[in-house]
Length: 186
Image 1: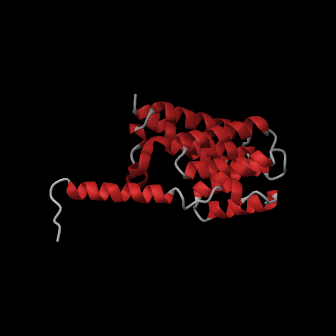
Image 2: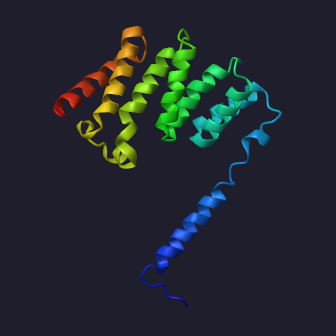
Image 3: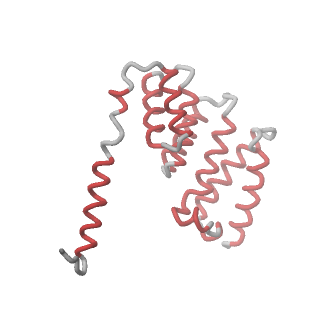
């Protein structure tokens, strides 16, 4: 029986993790090949289902495929929003805010543009907390002030442009919270 000493077991664990990660890359088949004959409806439905199941990586790939193949189709707009949400949930805040900004810029009169502002505010609201921030709910006053200002600005724009939005009350509460947190850092 072999006995692992010192760093030996660490090396074995590290090797096992690397092997698992490398094999995991092959778990998701190439989306382009898998979806080559799919209609926009099927692409959207599959992406939406993956998002609801919490498989954000797959959802993102399918939403991106849908946008690339059918950029002017009726599902492309929703794909941008749901792709932004999926990126946020996959802890890809830069991609999430970029998608929100693209949606706002491209479809300023869309009925769901208020949600794009709200989601952008949420991304910045929670962006720099990291893994432990979600578990331990870190004090916002200890966060990067730039992120708090970006979050506040997105919520403020939402409330100013869409005062009757279903997201406006939540945005106002978050703005108040952010104001207090920013004031306490001074």
